[in-house]
Length: 136
Image (cartoon, rainbow, N blue to C red; front, side, top):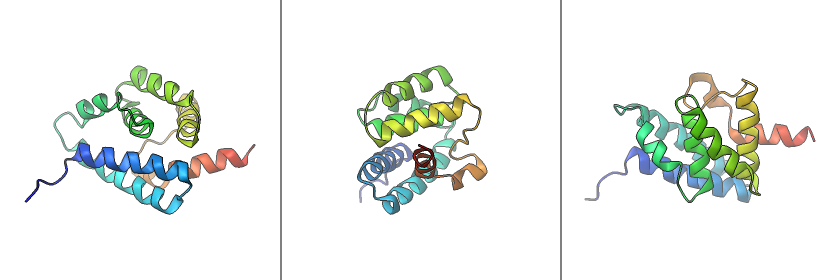
């Protein structure tokens, strides 16, 4: 019997799916991927280093969504590194890049509720992206 996927593998899969479904506009699958991201974050936080080592390595992922989600999770622990990654992704095109830019803007304004921190779990990134694009 194959081993169960690790928390890190679950995070990678969910974050990659989230990015793919964000770009394709499939909000239902995107929201399910978000829920899986939150579940993986909770599991990562159960490790002795709260998942920090795994997330730091994922800042170098070739997938912008995995990279961005890792950076978001590290904003409180490693703000300089996390913001640098988000700035890099935000400089690209697409909805994942747009979301990274909005994340930076909200973080710098002190309004960002990070995933896995209580009530913030009800705020989905696509909701933030949609509300920002409706203001334009």
